[in-house]
Image (cartoon, one colour):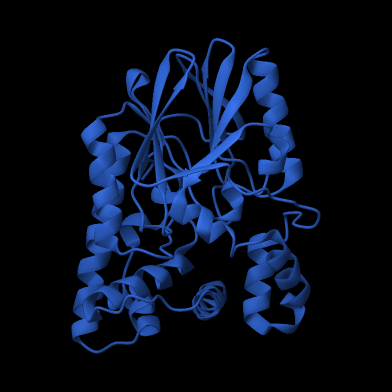
Length: 319
């Protein structure tokens, strides 16, 4: 099933009316999207990329496409490094939610350097970690702190174009932000949406994520730029909603039967979405559903979740 409304090709996509997207197939671990909103000589950048070379290439392409449009504002949709590690290359006001800024302080590029160095001694988890992140250059990144934070909602104006920033976390992370350009019927979602890839939940629950989809649907955008995967629309969003509702129901049935998170992740059939990438991420969805069912607020540790995903990834490769 194809949810993309534009060709899923690497690089610059002109969405019309001064909106742009930077798309990185295959949309898997670390291969995130970004956007640019331009009006006259001003522009707002939505997210940077996982490392400095990738971000520099993107910024050069934007500069060539819209010469003279200075980036005056950078919005980070959340704290994960593949959406903010290139921030030092942008001389602008950097905005994110207060919670996302707090999370950024605990997600440093230096940690990724250390994990990559330790990976050879980490068994299958290290092999999986290397598979996910070996393509990126984490050394030498000096990510500055955001300059502006907010709770709830914030409005910015780019030229004469209003841009609405709306906090919808906890969902993918604790402080997720949607970027809505109402006059252009375009929304940049960050990792609230993984299109044609299994989503991952670090902080919220599936009901939280469904509530974030409600916010997007209420805006009725014609164009939706996800955090990962191809550009889509409301039909694509509806399919992602179906996936999440199905996953929650299947998790409930297995929770009631007493299955463990790992056993449930292996048993649930996702044949309808068999072409979606990163099926090992189902572990995080089952984990968050089980926490929701038991009323447990604290998620499993990143180490434990990566270990469980690594085991499922290894099993899938062997089968």
